[in-house]
Length: 203
Image (cartoon, rainbow, N blue to C red):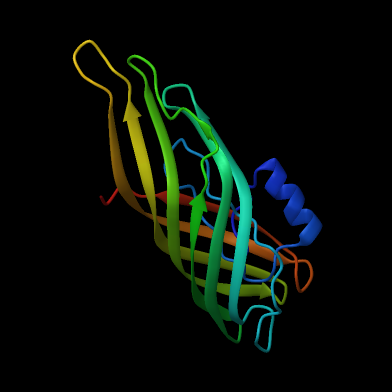
């Protein structure tokens, strides 16, 4: 369903103008102290199914991410992504699975850190979640979901009196769990609030 209300200003404006489609998969913050992955999806085809809470979907998404850190510098760039999933409804019970991938095209940031400095950036990322919920009313869904996300990240270190500059690439995999409430304003626009926790890094 439509995900966390952690939009960047540009993404939030676009979402209000275009409207997020029903059951749009969203991403979660990919690491502590860094910004979340884009959460905006362009409107797509109507969901196939007897209700707005049931059906399959596929979305292309776009956005812009800018992250700044006093210790690790910053990076920024446009993002492109694909999202998809399938949800089922049995009475008041709604369940399903969703996932997506995202690529950040770096256009700025600290790619060559100075003496004794560090720089962090990411490019590819993905997430998958299983979700279950119950309808409090025909237009209000209370849900919980569990899953994980992975991100390809790069850490760069500048030279020091004892070492040469180096770069380390890695794939971080982290589990997470969230609960939320979604209110369907129309067939193509809904608002959701989520809270969750991110587990320790698996690798």
